Image (cartoon, chains in turn cyan, orange):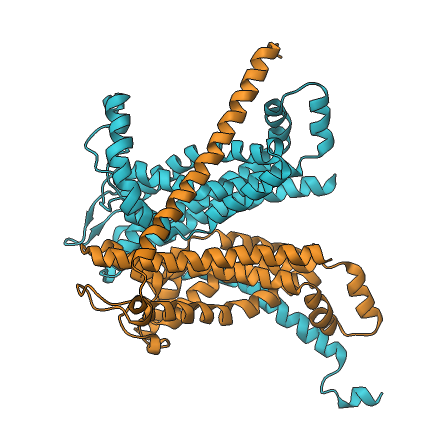
Length: 314
Length: 285
């Protein structure tokens, strides 16, 4: 009894206070997320008023006349992301399969850590390595090989001059960057498949590729989809790695060898000089990027939650 | 169902296994290539002056990156001070008060989504919030941007780590008559201490290499970071960007590599020590 007199507030009130404080902090996540949308929408109002819906479909980019269109940046973002995902998804899938099914545990553990470290390297390092090492490498070896040796220059995808910069190089660097992310999630999904299922398939004589294809992929399809969307989300918004190697020209992509731009590269490249409507147009580009990545993340979370709930029930 | 011969199936299996080993090799090759380039080029420009002198204005071939190192440390520490406490407290809420509750799920969901929002968007947001309103770039704005990126990471790892503490510990603390807040802070958080520290350090490692959000907030400068609260503050990543892209001078490229090595080495050391720390604590139990 003596003790309670000394306390300024009763234990119950202290507990309530504690609960409310922690709840407020946790709610910051929702508040900031909403704040992103409100702030970016607010800042893009002048551009929306000036250009309307045409902004989305115009490929004009003329700071002198103050005319801006988002189409080249949006198209560039989609092209680089598509290249990255097409390369990284199948590769992450077989790497995850190797780590879970084939490799001995000690080796698998070591390789997992190594691949996680690949994810830890900051994007600016990828960008710098891309600019000084990978762009010349693409120019001297990969691009001539694809264009001349394989005669792919006849197809529109690989047509035109090449100098190492452009969509293909950006896409490949993005693929290297997102591979560890997709791989880590796929690894977890592979591990979630109940051993009984796998073992019965092995017992029935299936090879490990058949087990992966027919058991793991069916069972964990939602999780795998979630993993792909997580990788997609990273590739869509990546700035520095792309900025250094894409070439930064406001042009619609016609060939993979061509230089272009993405939403984030346009932002990083122009924001410092931009004033007035130009700046507002950049904010609107940011809003578009936010909406795209929000959608991707929501889908990713949806699929991943479904898969963990499915595991929880069993 | 198509029936296929055993030979065919085994060949396919072998081919896929070979492809997967090659892909692992390829991933490691890229990692080795990148790290080798950074270490090789970076070490070459390491000298006493490189670590003690500030950056010089554009075009002057000598000078160091000492101010940028200090600035990065300031900005990152600032981010820790702003972002970690709400992250920890919010994580406590999710783990202790919101297990399976609707509000908890909404918060978890937005934190997960927030982790995937491109960092450049965070930069734009903080620019509009702080730089535009105060009319000046500042290191503080950079810290706020980084803290927004850290926050959901700390929030989710804190929750995960606290969930790993056995319920028996909670119940015994409460049974002894400890109020909830005391039980949480003194017993449960202490039990999960290593995990919480690992989470914070990993979040630090994640943001210390960020460039895009600093582009719109902290910017860059050649002075020492004394104007952290009111002026553009120099930092390693923007310095790298400036030196690598906006300059034709090989001396500046060399210094960009040096700065790249500092940041890469710091992040790798943070990451590896986190893993060791967490592994040791797991074995100790």
